[in-house]
Length: 165
Image (cartoon, rainbow, N blue to C red):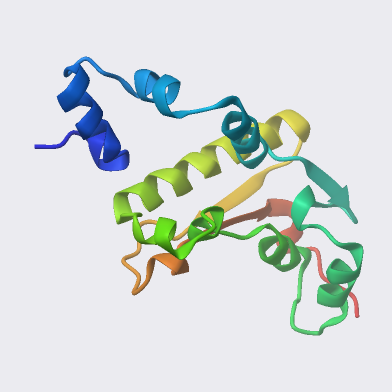
C-alpha cells in the first residue's frame, strides 16, 4: 500500500524500491531537482504582490488596464470580485504541457492547492500584516475535470467596498 508521499510523488515508490525504504522526499529532491527549478518554484510559491486602489493582486497577474476594465465592466459590484478574478489560479495551469497534466491525480491537486493557499496566506500576512484575506479553493469538490480546480483570494474588507461606475 502506498503511503501519502508516494501517492503525491509516484516516482518516489520506484526510488524507494531501488534505494531502500528510507529514501525520503529530501533524497528525491537532491537526486532529481536542480537549482533553476528551485528558483522558479520560489517565484510560484512566494510571489510578489502589489497594492492598487487598496486591492492586493499577484504582481504577475496585474495590469492596470485590465483592472480598470473589470472596474468599469458593470459586472462586478465590489472590489473583492476584482481581486478574486485577478488572483485566481487554475492548478493545472502550473504545468505547461498536456502530457504533464495527464500525469496528475486528484490527491496531488488537492494537496498542492491547499499548500499554495497556506503559503500565500503566510506571505500576505508578512507583507500586509493589518489585513485579513479570504482564500477559496474548490479542492474538496469532485469536479468533472482536473482543469476546473482553482484557488483565489481577496480581502475581507473589500466585500462591502462598492465599485462606482
